[in-house]
Image (cartoon, rainbow, N blue to C red; front, side, top):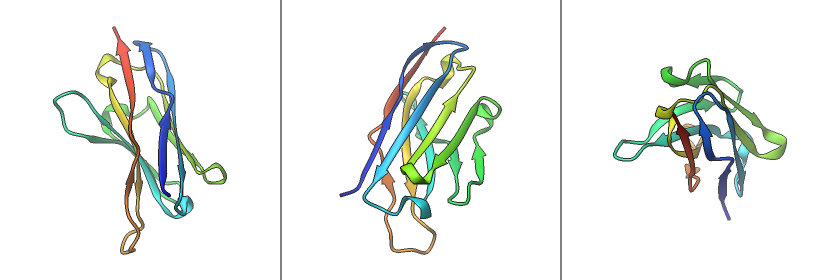
Length: 119
């Protein structure tokens, strides 16, 4: 049974920090790229940060220098450290497990965790 479970969301004042965690089970975590997406009300779901299975990272321009994605394959966990938060970072944040290219495996989504940044 596959599970992708986010935690760490909450409400924080502008300029504050939060760390999101995503624990995965039921698939071979180490061969998947992992990503964090976010969706604000009335907007599309956008990629915030991604980490390949080899640890290569990339970020949405608006979060570069403020957010850091990392992974711990021993714990089947991916993290998103968010610093210097802004009200425009308010959204539901989703963890995404991206299947290896050209494989027959599936992609997986978590249920989301709410992040609210007050001004």
